[in-house]
Length: 234
Image 1 (tube, rainbow, N blue to C red):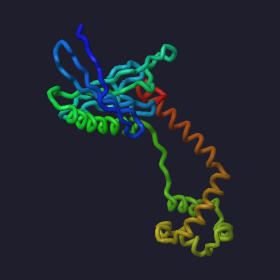
Image 2: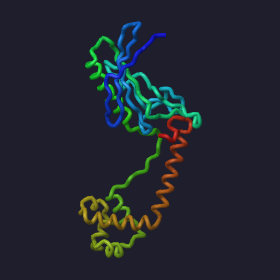
Image 3: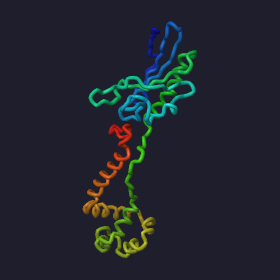
Image 4: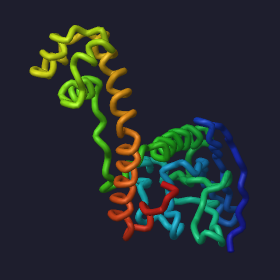
């Protein structure tokens, strides 16, 4: 077995992450290998499967972060929790890269490894869009105002008194909702106040609660056969 000596040649913090660059010496081969270690957080786009610890079925794209000069090849320090039977990140979990050439100057190696570290951090920070996840439609303020005005349970005369907007103007909006797109910001704000008072007082909270339940159930149903995206850590 080859004897190796590791020497940290550069240590930095990028976006509060520990980034270590190492000069690994193999005495028997008289060869230097330059490595980079980039710290991983639990909230990251994990570079390994929390179920198997391997690099299969994950969102982190190793090909995306490897450069012409640095090969991003794996992870060190991924901790296996014997209680949950899952792999977890700790403060000592790092994505590891190695220079493709060893006949380069140390300053050059540091520059190349820093470039690779920034790409790794970008991939770790990448927002992961979960597949097949039902997403609620978010109304704009104009759409909310239209919903309020076209609701026949809402009395225009009463709405006029509360908003200070003339009743004939509100009737015109009810007949022609497109006109709301050209109304003043002040009128939209007044209608928004009544929108929230009307619907939250009536059933908005309950509808929102059931919408969340429906969304979560749909997500779990779609992903129950995929342990990686089913895992609540995501």
